[in-house]
Length: 450
Length: 69
Image (cartoon, rainbow over all chains, first blue to last red; front, side, top):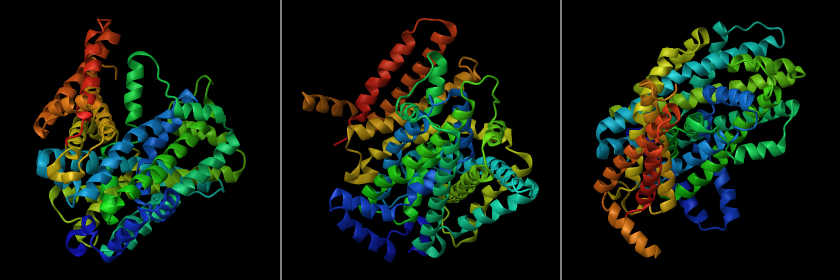
C-alpha cells in the first residue's frame, strides 16, 4: 500500500500499526508514564522546528536582540504559541481523516485554495526561494569557521559540503516506504537542534545573561505605541510560524504513519520538540546580541555585520567555532526540512504520488538545491520580495480554509473541533493572516507605512 | 445562562455556509482595523473605524469559536 501512495499512506504498514497498538495502551496510562513513552516517539515537531529555525529567523533574532535588547524575546514564544493551535489542527486532520490536507482543500474549497494558495505559493515556491538565504549564511559560516584555524575554504567551494549533507538526508527521507528512514532523518534533525542549543548556550555563557530580564522579555510582550506597535505585533506573530509550518507538520506526521491514537503524542511533540527548542534557541541568539550591542549607539543594521562584531569579542577559538557550527546546523537542517516540504507540497498540488522511490520525487526534493547559487550571489531580493508578497496575498485563504475544515463534518466526521478555546486560537491565527494581507495592500497603496 | 448563550451562538453560526460567510465578515472587520489604524495614526482622523473594526472582530471571534454540534 505504501508503495502505491508514498509518504501519505504508511499508516497501514506493520510498523505504524504496531506503534498505534502501543499508543492505544500508553494513552490510558498515568501522565508521567505517558510522557515518558511519548518522549521516545517524538519527531515530526523536530522536523518542523528545524525548518523554522533558519537563516530568516536567525537574522531576525540577531537584529531584534541588538536593537531592542531583551524586550523582544517574546516574539518567538508567542508566535509559536499561537501557532500551536494550527499545529494541533494539523494533528487533528491526520488523526481523523485519511485525506491529506491539500487534497482535502482541493476537494472542499477548490484547487485555487488547496493546490495554488497552500501547496504552490505558501509551500513550494517559498521553500525554493528561501533556500538561497540558507546557502548564503551557511557557506559564509563555513568559510569563517575554517579561517579560525588559518585554512582558506571559500564559499565558492564549501557549498559542496552543505549540498552533500542536505541532499543525502533529504533523499533518505521516507525511502522504500519505510518509517525507519523517516526516523533516521528526524533523528538527524534532533541532533542538529541539540547542536544549536549547545553551541549558542556556550556563546551566551561567554557574553553573559540577565536571567530576570530573560524571563520578563519572553513572558511579557512589549510593543511600541501607535502604528509601529501594530506593525511589530503582526510581524512578530507571524515570525516563527506560517502556513508552510502547519503543512510541514501535517505531512511529516503522515510520513511517520500517525493515525487516531497519535493525536496526544502529536500535541506533546509540538511543545517538547517544537515550542521549547525554537523559543530557547532564538532567545539565546537574541540574548548574545543584546548583551553585546544593546544600548550602544551606532550599531550595524545587518545581521552579518552584527555577527562579525560579536565574534570579535568572543574569547577563545572554541567559542567562536561554536557560533559558526550553530549557524551551520541552522542552515543545513532548514534546507533538509524545506526540501521535504517542497517535494510533498508540489506532489500534492499536482496530484502526483509523494513516493520517495519515484524519480519525480527525487527531482522535486532536489529542486530547492538551486539555492546553492546563494553561496555565490546571496539572496535574490526580487524573488524573495515576490514570494513574500504572494504569501501576504494568499495565506489568509489557507488559514480560513483550515478553520472551516476543522469545523467540517464532511472531512472530520464527529472528530470536528468541539472546543471553543481551540476554535478561538485557530481564529486568532486567521485574524493575524487577514491583517498581514490588509497591511500589505495598504502599504502598496501608500496608506500603511512600508 | 451559559447554555442559553451557547444555544444562541450555535443558532447564529448554524451550518458551514453561514460560518463561511461570517469568516468573510471577519475579513472585512479586520480590514476596518488595518484601515482605521492607518487613518487614525497616519492621518489623525477619528478612531471610530478602528474601534468598530476591533469590537466587531472580537464579537465575530466569539461567535465563530462556537463549535458545531
